[in-house]
Length: 307
Image 1 (cartoon, rainbow, N blue to C red):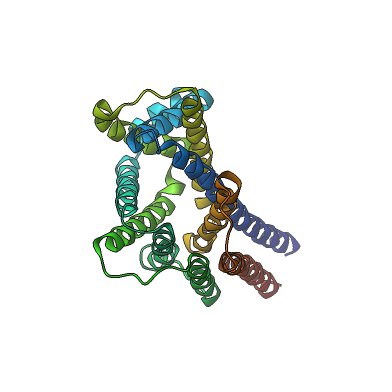
Image 2 (cartoon, helix red, strand yellow; image 1 turned 120 degrees about the vertical axis):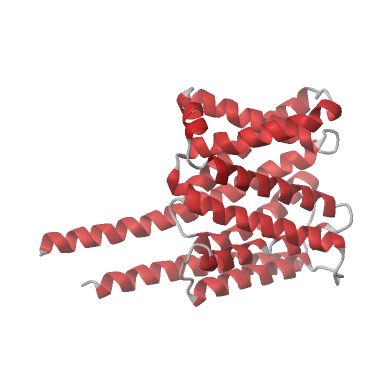
């Protein structure tokens, strides 16, 4: 009996550590993605978006070859997740195209507020598609985080226009891609997923690049390399995090990207956040802490019930 009890306690502790590792990895991923977006924002002023996407994917694939050798590429060709991974890549590409098309007509505050409907979509779809059980604390965290985004951005009154629909479509496609990632993350190694994902982007971006190519200077070349490396690390940590925690647990932590965006906006472009930004940031962080606290309490109750 003691051995069974010790085994159960060890399994519970391991499960808790796995969930918190998933939260940490995905939070790191969103920080890295924000750094990547900062580099891309600097690049797209002079370099076409398709060219940035092409070089980013090429850098990631080169990193996969450097650390994994040829074996993961052979595995990628024979992988059972080729079709769902390409579907996910197609959804992400569509999300980017919709988002950047809408950016011509909407303010950044409006774009950010609408786009951050994505974590709510992830939580809803995690119930419908993944059959995850979502407690009220996670729902409160998601909607609390979204309220923080609204306060921080202070959006203008939005009409039911085409740009608004495009951003909502981008949020829906990104949310759906996260659910797809959760469903396939356990079926294949992370490096194989990265090869499939970026192989799709490399091939897709290479076609319009034949007409849009611009030779980058030294500083632009370094930024392109840096963006690719940051994106590769961000994808790796996101894929690994998705293997360790439920999508509905991770969803509220996407809001941390907004906090990093304000910080980097100040450091790079000297943007000074308003008071509403700090209030919104507090709500966003509180939402994330609520998930951590509720998850820890749930695990503790589970341990006590097992005694």
